Length: 119
Image 1 (tube, rainbow, N blue to C red):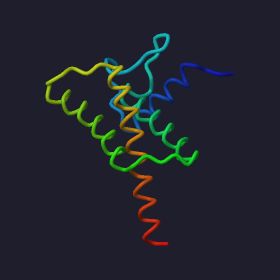
Image 2: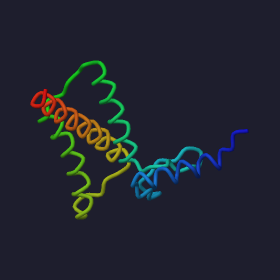
Image 3: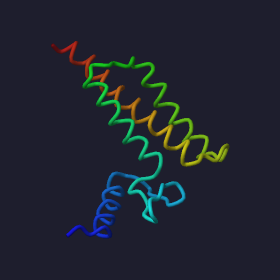
Image 4: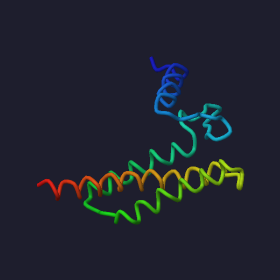
């Protein structure tokens, strides 16, 4: 039988092992249950999945654009870290998507470059 509480605890442990801080104020909730990862990490995972799907469809993104998208996430994190602006979960989700998308395409472009030099 499916046990929601046990499944939620396992997902929370997995999120923690993935390196997410899991701060409740920076996380989404569904029916009183906190997501296993914060809003930014949720976005990053989603961005990575989208990028992989586009790579499988043979759609490439230039490495410069990929790095710019990654830097947008980094800038949002940095500005929040130095208390210049207070981010919110929607912005964290969006910049996380951009960052996850950007890092995946950065790795992909580096892989393609190295493959072209080796092969």
